Amino acid sequence: MDSRTFTVSEITDIIKLTIDNTPYLSSVAIKGEISNFNHHFASGHMYFTLKDAGAMIKCAMFRFQNVNLRMKPENGMKVLCTGRISVYPGDGRYQLYVTDIIPDGIGALYIEAERIRKKLEAEGIFSEKLKRPVPAFPSKIGVITSQTGAAVRDIINIATGRYPYCEIVVYPAVVQGATAVKTLVDGLAYFNEKEPVDTIIIGRGGGSIEDLQPFNTEEVAYAVRASRIPVISAVGHETDTTVCDFAADVRASTPSHAAELATPDKNAVMHRLGASLDAMTAAIEKKLTENRNRIDRLSSSRALTSLENQILDRRQMLDTASDKIADKLNIILLQRKKDFETAAARLEASSPLKVLGSGYAYVEKDGKRGTCAKDLTAGDAIKITMRDGSVKATVDEVILDEKE
Image (cartoon, rainbow, N blue to C red):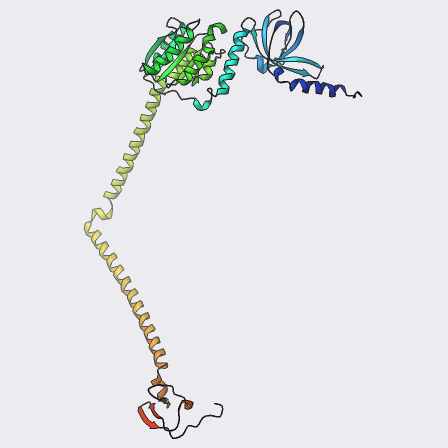
């Protein structure tokens, strides 16, 4: 088989394209030890090597990926890195483009949480179309969390401080360990079936991924999504994200934040009510002023100050209207008279009597007018009508014009 000649760039591009189009290399999780770690000061990018006893791989983590890291990578640290494998054409080496780093030892929990998240996302239970708004003015809020932790104290203190007109009902749940999932699910059922509330807050304070594991389960996610009452998820600190957060109607960064999202600020409400009252008062006063001015104008008008003047005005208007009607009737009558005289003149002009008055006559035979000479024979009885009378005669002879 003949070999083919490539440039270095061409063969590198082919290798890169082959790796980029390999599906299982587009999303991988690799365990190893960090070495040669370099956090570039100017760009903010991280470059390091991930190694184990048998091999090593170059890694790059760009600034937009590492800015929210929950740990600080260091040489010698055993970690689990997730990302994709590709080729950096500049030196022709393959490397891992890292999207997240977590300490090794919790990798299995992290991978399982990601698997569940992707499965539920594919099922559509995280869809924004399913999210419901939290009531603006709740009368009762249900809280599912540990009754001895700091989270419940923060929620109660902030919620009652912001909006003291709302009742807080706590369902004491276990938030970590083997029994946590069941108590969390039972708490959601309790508020949906036995103790109706306007909003449910479910959560706990921060902790390790092992501590937050109950909130990364399918059972809790399904129960949150099935709730008929809007649910706020408040799990951990701001950088912690769980499957429960994705399933909930609203995600709060902390339990304290959840209390703020669930309640209005009474001071802000009073300010808005005061502003609304001022606006309504101003609108009413403006309307009253306009009506007073209108009444003043009407009361000083000529019509109201003198009824007699009003009657005289109406009489004058009636006289003017009567004159206009009479003028229009005269014009119509004159036009009709003119039209009649014209028609009479035309009728008179076309009258047979008019013709007879000029010395003409017409002949009738058997009562039929307009008899022609060719219709007559000698001995026929005819009637001749003239201007001042008629004559009955007998035809002696018929003389036709030569052209007939």
